[in-house]
Length: 333
Ligand code: ISE
Image 1 (tube, rainbow, N blue to C red):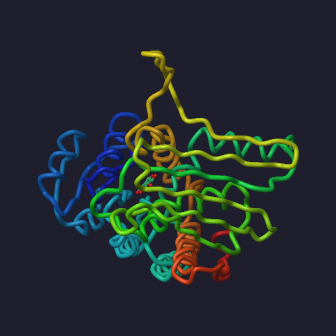
Image 2 (tube, rainbow, N blue to C red):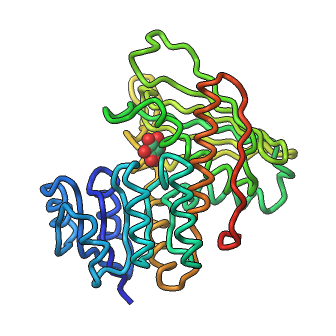
């Protein structure tokens, strides 16, 4: 079977997904691409062999020749577009976050629960990254003993112009929120967020430091810095009772020059997580064929945004905030 996909959003991630689908994923064809900027949709369509370029996302969702939808449009459009896919009964992979607020994510959860089957996957691609997968396997092997702490660092070279300070949490740190829940297989129960002073507090989106307590009193720390200034750098160390295990970034070479030994940082996440994006897409196609979903569900999307919301509240109130999730519907157990 060839799965025919429509893509909504032809910006940085949309174009990247389109290229990956066209060049490296089996049993898939892109038929149509929608973007608010028609020239951008046309250019990605031309590069990836799609027949249709349009500014109208509904034309893609309603196209009977399209089996499944990939959403990579701006965060605030995710809820409505995902709901339209569920109403059309089409499988959908929506880029993270599922929506910027927990309330909007719950609308998607309710629609899926109403339908009685899963159609939505959220693009938390780190679940498919070989480094995180290895950490999870090692933890599951029991050799390292029980986990106690998970320390995470997430730095970007510089924030894009459309970024705001809330997005450091709702758009960036949500990756660590999701991957911690997935790795530790428990919920995050409380959060306190700190904002260190910077030399010009108003000029840039500065770093934030998040401390979570999990439901069984383990600790997760996340340093998130969207203006790290030197490259894209994601780290993580899981501390267990008998040892630790850290992520390693894929590095292919090391230079020696002028008394310096070094390696290159990627400029953004596309290179660091290229394998994860590819595996995620291939797995999504497999799930459309088999009905067995492995990636983050709409419920996981809701949980990540609810935790991010509690983190924003902690930041504005300057104190630890309890995280309360709704009861998990049986569709997601
Ligand atoms: C961005 O939107 C992403 O999704 C990247 O994966 C993440 O690393 C970055 O911090 C986000 O802003």
